[in-house]
Length: 392
Image 1: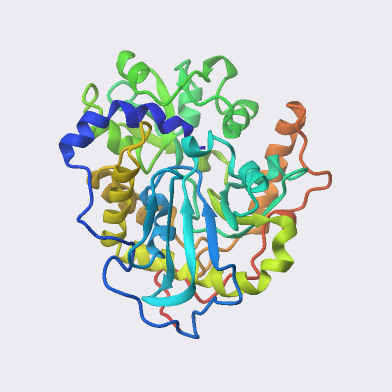
Image 2: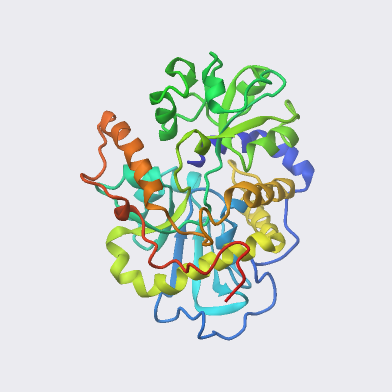
């Protein structure tokens, strides 16, 4: 999913360095310094969850994944060799009695899809799996989502508003012959072309994440990306461009998948149920708390990116702050009710209806008779926890 970001990060390294990439010396997320309080029975996971809960992400540290870094307690162990960070799992400053290990994805796992990685390495407790990925792997590597920290996907297509002032939606792009660069293999593009939102003749899957082609075309092409990153990067960190872009979300074109939902291997549900009953509400609360007070966690994210020293990824304070603003405005919310993190069956059925014929045409059919309840469960979500909802 995050492969489109590779080249942008590489090309922006000098600009990021000039911006002063790096943290403030804090050594943790929400508990950046000091010690945690003794384990509190109200949040205790000891003896209920694995001693170390392992979360596999699909990319390097960034604010979009801040909920997990926000749950790390003091003095985390940053393992730069194995690309993981481990610390006591805390909730509201209280030690839960177990550890949390957050692992990097993307280049750190050879760009393996998280679903596949979870079946290769069964030490992973939960992983970030988007709805369309879950459908794709449902036949042989089934996962079930238990909470969705982000309600709406930031997948987007961007363009130069100076070149194309008439564009406001992806469908507007499709009314022209403007070339659209994207990362080959992204399922949403097969949907956009299959429904004639875009023409097959205008899409180009050669995009590798580098800004060179967009810049060289002087804005005469459109390009896929993430609304929480590329618009800021192109305006502030790609020196050859250095001006605003405009974008439209793939979600608004009728592809409403849940991005990077926290998921388990489907067969593990019964075993993990007691743990998930207590853990999932902690994740919900952590997302609410992180969005309200992101500063220490963002500083830690920036520090870990610097410590990992990846050739693929850099992260600046400006980009982290931009991502938080966009998440608050557009991507992290309660959806159609007052609860953060829950799923709508109709929305998932819509994705099954969209993605199944695409996968069948690719001779990679999903599970026969796939139903929404195969892909998600709301039974562990606390309906009383939401953005702007007073704590009970």
